[in-house]
Image (cartoon, rainbow, N blue to C red; front, side, top):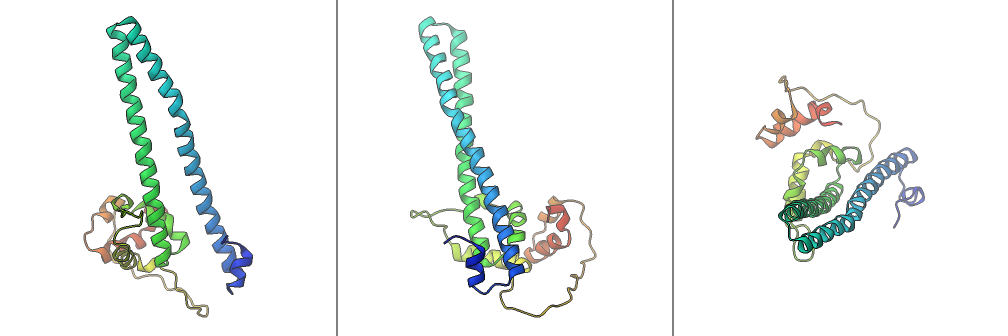
Length: 200
């Protein structure tokens, strides 16, 4: 079912919340479209490079000269690397989509998902024989614990005055320093206190 204003309104969601959800959904869809177009452009280059390889190989066989063989081998190496890189991009995109779905299931705010993806090891995800994420429940539990502050509360509450989180008193100079913190809660707290380093 399409995510439309009519659908969200039917669920009883307030109009201002509907606007936020539609806006966040639109950003996500546009990002996926750009990624798809990038992969499509890369894939469209494959036939051209393959033709160059075939032409070079034919010339090498016809002339029997070492110079052609050297060029052919170099071009083939580049082509094989290009195909491998494209395959890795596709694999990463699939894992990122799966991780994004887990973040949404846990209830991470739409506004924070892109930022969480930037600092998460999505490539560590594994799939089973049916193409589903292995140990999804354990992974969702870990996500919920590490990014608890970014989970949207579903119960409706009256307007409250936000209280800024108490600072730890420690300052960090870089993202790497924060990501090196071993304690999960302390690292997540440091990320929240220095969110500008992570682009959110």
